[in-house]
Picture 1 (cartoon, helix red, strand yellow):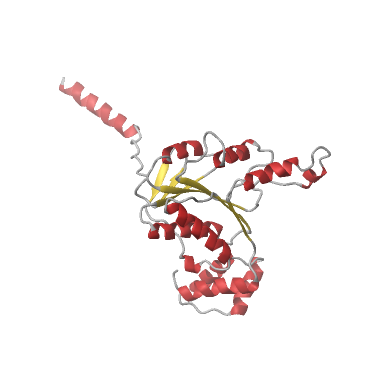
Picture 2: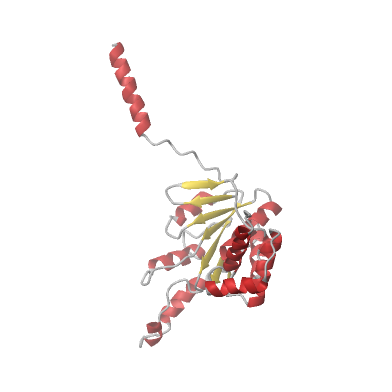
Length: 273
């Protein structure tokens, strides 16, 4: 009998090791940010975001986003946001920084939830509905494949009018390289039957966002101002001609290129930033 009990215990122990642990329940009222993956959710204990003071060259866009996120955190009416335009101009960084600033102004009242358009947003909205907290659901670098009509229609339904539309305490923030989000082709202009229908259908998605902000490649002066801001924050000296040469080698001027240059400056000085 003793041997049988020992064998059963070993079998039970082996089964325990094979069985995956039950994931801990997510507390949606505690953390500053979350990553929603549909089947699983991960809490982010620290929201990494630059200081708003370091985000330069996009002053009008920054004022609009910061103000909108503050209203959301305060429980007031706020817009869904589409941030579109040039790569590297701080769209994602601005959203993170705005949520961090709003959380500092209204502790515990807002959280950022990073998701993808195909990760079961309807289930996420149902999860967040009714919480005594506001959430900004963030979809970064959104785009749909050519010919994908279901994805844009589903997103339009979530934004307005659909039975699964996002709840009052949730707003969407989407970044994209294009205002229309989906691909546009020259052949659309040559369609002999209703030539504007496809384009209008694409733009209808962008029009569902209450706040649509364009981010454009920065001027030389703006680029140098961004470099100067980063360099001053990290107590680094820089030469304007060297900074411009760096941007020429990269083939563009943007906040991201400016940050890469300042990282290069820190590396030359054997500094960590």
